[in-house]
Length: 95
Image 1 (cartoon, rainbow, N blue to C red):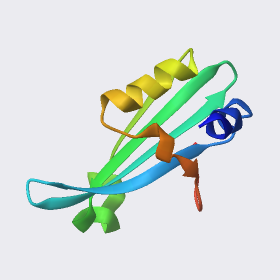
Image 2: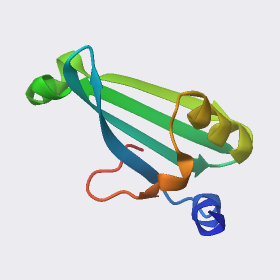
Image 3: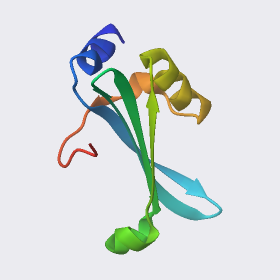
Image 4: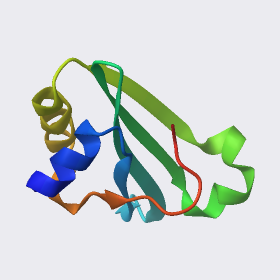
């Protein structure tokens, strides 16, 4: 976990993508964390898998800012996300 935190402190984006079954429908969730200036910015995006071709109409996005990495990690924990699973993001970055 120390390497994960160190990479975020250096301004690298780290995150995960996972799928959840909610009320019989499969959703894609993306989470990310990046340090920008002196703030830690969290990113949450989710969309029903069946609507991914019209992402701009059905996707939901949430961006929050925290003043400490601990608060950002605690936010992810509070919504049931395992921060220790965060990895470098391949492809298009959310930030």
